[in-house]
Image 1 (tube, helix red, strand yellow):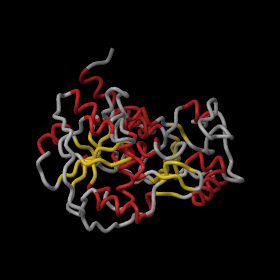
Image 2 (cartoon, helix red, strand yellow; image 1 turned 135 degrees about the horizontal axis):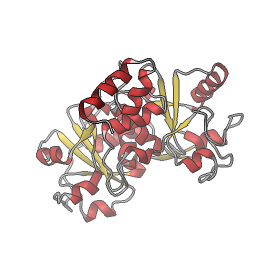
Image 3 (cartoon, one colour; image 1 turned 60 degrees about the vertical axis):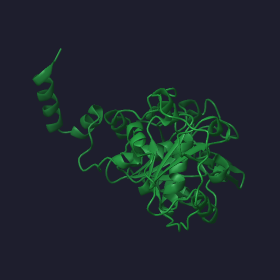
Image 4 (cartoon, one colour; image 1 turned 180 degrees about the vertical axis):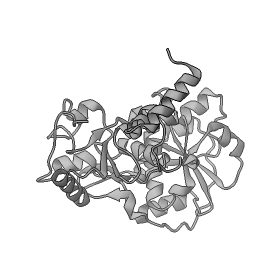
Amino acid sequence: MIRGKETILLCAGLLAMNGCASVRARLGLPEKGAPSLRNEMLATTKWLKANLNNPSVIVVHVARTREGYDAGHIPGARFMSWNDFAVTRNGIPNELPSVENLTALARRLGITDDSSIVVYDEGAGLEAARAYVTFDHVGLGDRTALLDGQLRKWKAEGGALSTDAPTVVPSDFAPRVRPGVIISLQEMRRLVKDKMESRDRNVVIIDARPEEQYSGKQPGEGITRPGHIPAAVNVYWMNNVVGSDNPILQPIRKLRRLYSRAGVKPGVEIITYCRTGVQASHSYFTVKYLGYSPRLYDGSFLEWNAAKDTPVKAGSEAK
């Protein structure tokens, strides 16, 4: 067994050899020229406890119903209903609402350009990540962070809970829409066509669904053509966190290794999708946290599956 200095020398030697990029990926090290980690996108429970009384910090509790919020939430947290930022459009559920509706939502929450927003949910982070994409879409991404470990970690550490809903003063928030966050069906058609015809390696398409749905073994609700978008690679979103009962993000090296193996590296365009855009939101958040600039295919596979003349592939893509 190689230990201590021998391990360091071996790794240094491997990195100096040809093919060092693949070695760096296996070791969980950043690729040469890789962007810096966006630490500001993740809030620790320790930091939040120390900043609960900071008037510029807005804590947002995201859930599909108010039941959990009313039973006990982080003190001062404002409630954001799933239906406030996930709508059905053209038969596809969980889509982003209009910018006008999102602006009204931000104003109701009292969000301003000076706010530091911390979002959490009651589960493993799906709803919170979707809320992050929502805020990023209207120009608040650089002011928004997810609570690492979500409400579960807060409770496990004995964090204070409250049943009082805070009084919120509406704001005059004005959106700064970032159209590049979302990619449309038309854009996806062109991108996939170009990739299939030219074998373009400068685009990585990440399918965030479970492997069984990606391969087509399990179609998923509403899917009539099981499988995935051609050339997409499968990185199940749950691999981003330690577990459903402990939804903290995986260690940085593990995340870098996970996405490097999928082809994420400097200079590539990164698209995430799933069935309706929710699981892909967590992948979007994680890849952006690693320093990249991903885009989300909001209609995702449910829209792709229903569209005419869109290719679908079953099985797994060759590595």
